[in-house]
Image 1 (tube, rainbow, N blue to C red):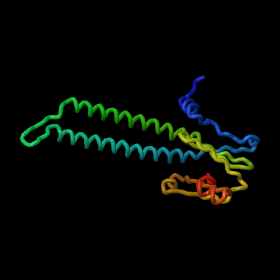
Image 2: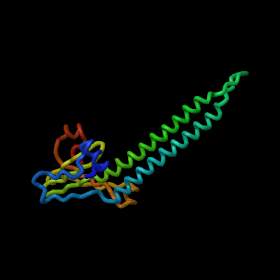
Image 3: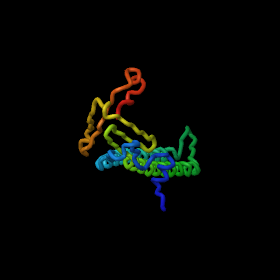
Image 4: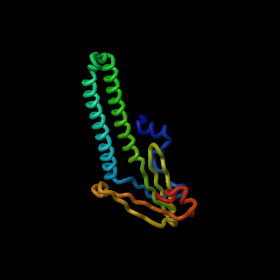
Amino acid sequence: MSVTLKSRVLGLLRIPERPHIPPGEEAAAQVFLAAPLYYRYLILAWALKHLFAWGGFAAGLMFLDVMLNRAHVIHLGDDTFALPDFWYGVIVASEIFGAALLATQTVTSYFITRWNYECRYYILTDRSLRVQEGIWTFKEQTCTLANIQNIDVRQNPLQRFFGIGDVVVRTAGGGAAAAAEDADAHQA
């Protein structure tokens, strides 16, 4: 049986591939995944970040090239010094290493974004709402339906374009002391 790269990485990070349904709630549990348009939204955000990163990298290379061409011959008073060819090799090797590092980061972050989407579950039972999300930082929250006090829907302009939004569920409990310690403790 072939084990996929995703399974290996999730196993290494101890992230469940399937949603964890509360014991005794299996019969009434409804499992939802995030909307497919949410994945497109994530990929667009990922692509824009990396477009700017690669653009910045290219601009840095062009700046470095201009500076090296100017610094090839240094004039100090009546003396003229040439930059040794060795340093050009070091700089080119650094540029290649930087490009390889950025390419590796681009591919890795794509898979993290994709797997983060695929491992995001919303489990609704007769008594609770459970949200599982995250790859790097796994987060699992359970809100008892009886304690829900407020439900907000938030959308930024890009989310409105995709027809998606963030549903924020707030629950009761904890008092002022708990709210001061962790403002998001009662929010999913």
